[in-house]
Image (tube, rainbow, N blue to C red):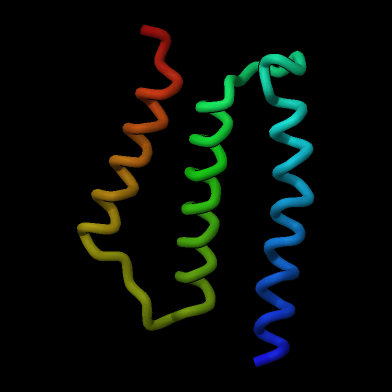
Length: 86
């Protein structure tokens, strides 16, 4: 159990180690190209993609169903709506 805790915290540590500077650099008030809503959308889409890939690779008995694929399609649609210049 202890090793699982350290592995999960280690993964979170590396995620935040890259995420925090990327948000600071990418924020439009710091000279970056994205506003805060766009940055959060990017973060959520990437996190869910990596989580899904991790699950499919390491939990071999897990399969994607139609509702999972529909959910991902809706996430892609959300990214489109957030980034579209209306």
